[in-house]
Image 1 (cartoon, rainbow over the protein chains, first blue to last red):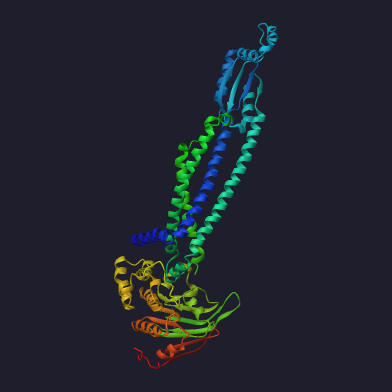
Image 2 (image 1 turned 90 degrees about the vertical axis):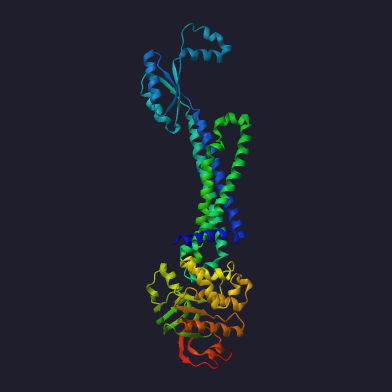
Length: 301
Length: 230
């Protein structure tokens, strides 16, 4: 096809938006709502996931060393712990520090500690954090293999709850997002079908005068893309405003922040580029493909 | 050239729309196809445009063997045919000029050629003053002239006119047939489907009568008072 032919088809697509403005507006609204449904569901999922990730980061495994371990071996164990790929943080906690801490927490039983004289019954330990809690068992086995380990205390209950919580949330939010996508596709498909149905006679005439399928579809494709682009742009603005408003409210809730962690709410400014691309490109793509597919039924004459 | 050889069409409902029809329309012919409603006239047009396929037999239109024609090549066939419908089927959102030019745009004709050809064809049907009007601003006769201009603009080998006078005043019917006769005189084959026997008797020529899916009459008759009205 010549450049002038493509130019004509693009112009037709642009003109069609205005000529069929009522149907275009209906498609625009449907696309806008669909994009918002899917977009906000995805953002909610991402935030919940980050919050759970933040909780997971609070895990702490305490590795108690045998009382007979000398300083050099302790240091060596510390180095080996730091070198483990799934260990993100290693802090040494001497038995003296442990005793002081115990005394502070049990100040009213001071008499018990007096009887110890200089004999410290506690042991030195390392307090570590693991990166991926799903593989915490393997990491603990690896630590046991280092030798000179008296015992290991790991937050298994906490980890199991978080793993289950994440699994449930992934399924629930995944299902919600999938349902939103399906509902949106059905609505968009019907809206574009209605738009194409209103112009079925035009399509039939094109077929009778020898227009190819591509020639017929292209203006619908352009039209859908334009509508989708603007729906995506408006969805972006709405999402941005709503997101910031909700994030501000949450950040003023100190009690809530203590649970979910201050840094675990994703800032819109950190993700605006990807959200913009997803909305605008997603809108344009869904609009374009939806329109082009909907013409198929009337093209076969 | 249009040729049907022993063509039958049976719809999925079991209705036999055409039953062993054979006929040949040579290049440059003008033929009236007459018959009552449900006789098979519309089925024949659909066959010629490859909107449907023959259940039996072979159909050849302008050198295309339709049974062997792939779907992607149907536009090529249709570009050799101009079609005029009873209900005009103009695109309401386009002006007269755009409706006619549209056919040339479909075949990716050069812009300069479109600018030259479209006004010429619109003038042939006598509508140069209405070139910028929209279909809903035109009378029935004018709309049908636009439809004829649209069918003609691509310089097709064959024009199929499906009841072109069905939706216009009887007086204007003669004008439309005169216009088609003029186009035929320039070498374009015309196949005009009609059930207006007065028109057929008036103009005469080749008459093909289809009844119950069969050609029951295919003869050339003389016109009664050709030219008297004008």
